[in-house]
Image (tube, rainbow, N blue to C red; front, side, top):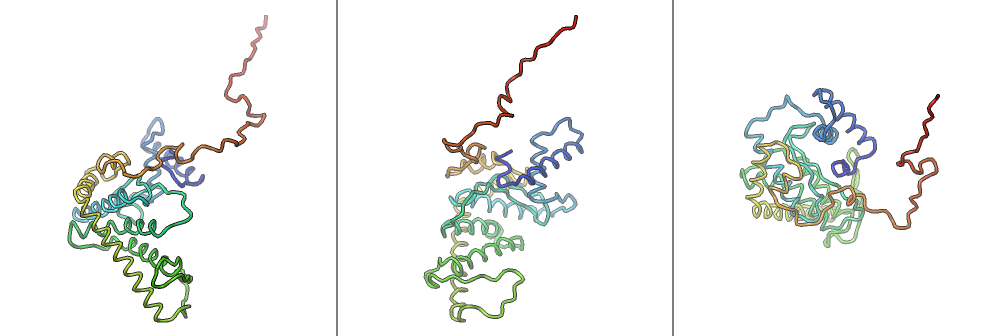
Length: 282
């Protein structure tokens, strides 16, 4: 469960357990199994399954290739989070979704951010390569890529042309009356952002074309099973060429050697059977 619920808070895990119990009860099961927990995790992460939302065959095929593009690009880029699950079952507002294992990274390099941009563009690139046209399903991906590119140029000083300058980006809903830089700098920023996004997209297209057979194989498997777990992804794409954490011990890591692990007096010998004398009354 620890490997399947990375980044979950205690409240999130409690919600998963409650939801798994409800699912098991609805199915009149005698016990709660890992299948019930998987369904519960899906609901907590991505929302309710929309059984009434039936996609047309061509739409479902587009979603499958879109998600397969995301999955394949992220699988072969070192700085993308490990993929745990990918699904084309409509949930919440999404027609498909993927669950990743987040890593505790607090300092981000431009190389890491560019890999994440390519991951976000993988769906649109896959649609372009396989269908030679793109749909509206990538709007959230494009928004995320745009925010990342602007952050690199405006805030983080990753653009040599703009230089080591940092300006606050307006938040959603903020009224922006003036900008803290000139119109010339604003145009330079826009040009740099477009160039970063375009280079990331061209790189993503290259990965999709290079791994075309794997993308198609993964998309067909998604159309068949609708939801793929980590073991399915390894079977289709092969072992990921980068080391990743997959077990509880690897995720949590060992504690320091000098850590005091002495149990309080009330819990001492908690796992040992107490010898109880039984007196027989005459």
